[in-house]
Amino acid sequence: MTGLWRQVLSALNQPDARPDREQLLALGAAELAHARRTGTEPVTAEEVQRIALTEFSLLLDVAGARVALSQRQRRAARG
Image 1 (cartoon, helix red, strand yellow):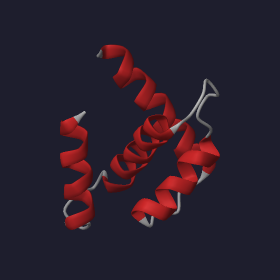
Image 2 (cartoon, rainbow, N blue to C red):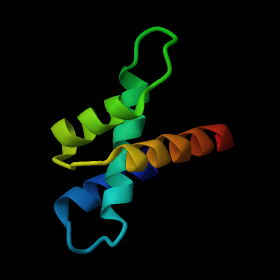
Image 3 (cartoon, rainbow, N blue to C red):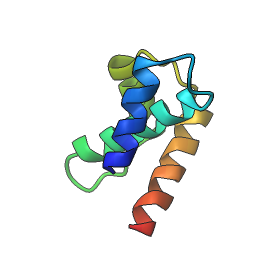
Image 4 (tube, helix red, strand yellow):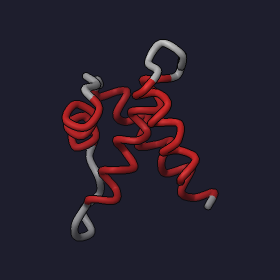
């Protein structure tokens, strides 16, 4: 996942240089939500939205949060 965090940092530092900025930050928020979860409860789209706003100042709609969660699950399944 270090590649993801490099991309997230790039998107934060050069917002106009990344056309996929929102998608990368949403994916980063989904990854953080998974890393911070406690117990066995699944991560919710609302948690991803909250993290995206507080950590990245990204106002993410629920559909975008769900897409990010789905992408995160596919990335995790690939290893």
